[in-house]
Image (tube, rainbow over all chains, first blue to last red; front, side, top):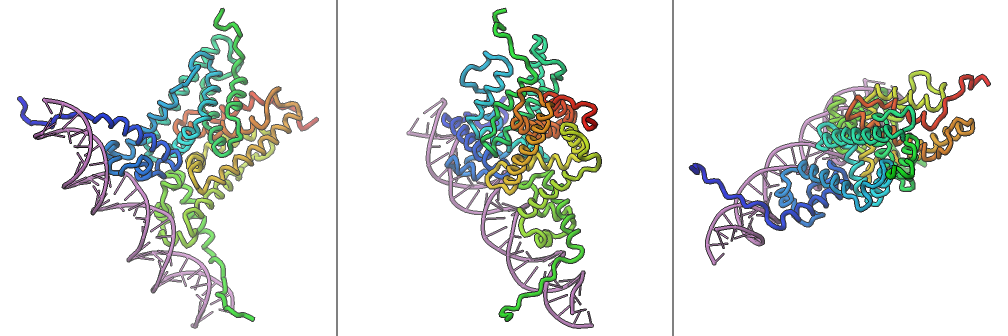
Length: 206
Length: 206
DNA sequence: CACAATTTCGAGTGCTTGCTCGAGATTCAT
DNA sequence: ATGAATCTCGAGCAAGCACTCGAAATTGTG
């Protein structure tokens, strides 16, 4: 019943996955330094040490490459070296800010692409739209949980507070990129202290 | 003693200033929609309805054009249609947020260029660096004045609060550009209420 | 080993970019 | 009016862009 003999697919070779990742890492650096529009495939190929043609074998278009970079960024962001989920919400946020501060490249990429994503049909537009919406829900849920514990100060609107946490974080990163003396973690901590009461010491023992 | 006869300068013609401004306005729209790197001189020339060559007669390089656009943006931002300086600091901020909301193009331009400005030798980099520094000082001064009136809540760090106001504002604009249901003014107002006590009603009558 | 699928790449595609050149059209002080 | 300065523009430049093509080198399966 094999009317048309189609070529037997063998799938990628052993070193292919590794190659792909080194391309993504190089692209992350290039896009972080020059942006998506500003960074060329040739720049990325040079950084990897391969021809631009070969690069396009692994990623059919520049857009595909960017999407892979965005995935990689999320993946790197999700990787929490230690003490990940143990603490409470505000502590986790501030810890994350301090953690990110040690990887300026990711912040740079995030800030630059966030701007670019506002343009016409930018490939990263959906990514940022979704990310903002997801994070707003996530943070709002966390704040609601605190509210039920009576740890939220009176008059705090959880949805607006969720958006504000994200906004403050993103905005302070932009300032930090242009002036490293800005204390990102302190700014976030200040705000969280304003809307959240400190947890009771025996919170898990009750 | 006129060793070298230099051509007598006559200065720009009557319609030149008007032409320049129509170019700047068109460039503002183009850069707001596509960014600086993404928007071409041809795009701007087309929008004005003139040749790209003539455009370059008025602005020798693309960089010069961008700087003129940034100046124009500041000029438009400074223009306050009404009730400019009468109210107190937090009210002025929130009013300005509401005002800007009616000119989305300016917000778009600001957000997009803010991202791009983080790249290598971007022409707008110094502009944003200076702007952030200037605004931080300006807001910190305003907050200090409120502090002396006893209107600042205890434990507020004026310098960090100044940076946080700017950060929150910039960040919430980015979210708003991707989801117009975000209430920018309310987020700013919430934060300002957290750090600033309401003024006494007879504040100017005392 | 043999042979095909995968990976690599040099060369080249058509297109766009910011910018230059030289010349014609327009303005305006004299 | 005259003529030089200003303004406009078509044509063109070298460089860079994302991407294609055809073929050689490499890999891994049977």
